[in-house]
Image (cartoon, rainbow over all chains, first blue to last red; front, side, top):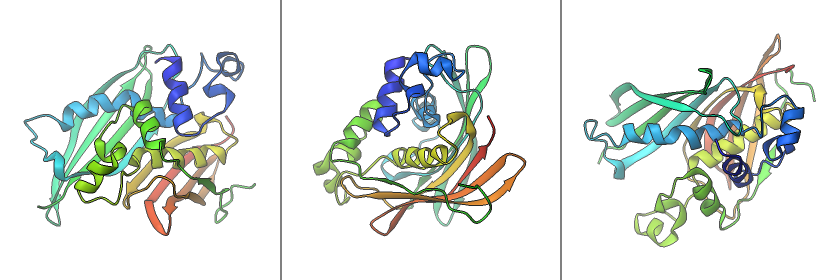
Length: 128
Length: 131
């Protein structure tokens, strides 16, 4: 996790607190280094989820796909200098009202094996 | 402000500027042209380039964290449904109401609205107090 990437993301979503930008302030508040806003989870876990979305075996019609809903459950905060590894599984596949639902679950662990976030990503493919 | 059941958290009002989707694309790595190319977006039937849904979710997370003095460790869970499309250069309002409060745990019902269009609905945030 790069400090400048965390700052860039924080700026893009309008988060300007010292702990998200300044290492000294973050350490004084009990973090290892500049701490990522919770939704930074998207930045480090989406690549793993995308590999699932694009998996030819699932054959998702991307042109008709919508991101229907999203859930994150957070654990250990992510700080600059951390190494986070994300694994994604297909949690559920179903059809309702003529639409296909693809539910992915991502689990992200830091360098000490602590869970930083668990994501549930629901993509909907419209009938067409 | 007391986080008692039925109370509202302070509203968050944000007007994303014309180039916000480009900065968010760079920050997040999501360069889908529907977010950054108005001509492409119109060609596929959208009114204009649209905001990233996860940007809207980030605003909801911001409002929830702000309600507990800005400590990101307080936000334990956030679930949202993406519905209407968000557009640049129009104000977004994020609101939240306390639905549960007990033993240091608070649950908020939240949504994000833009020009009468609820772009994020049925959002639920769970906060842990006293970190």
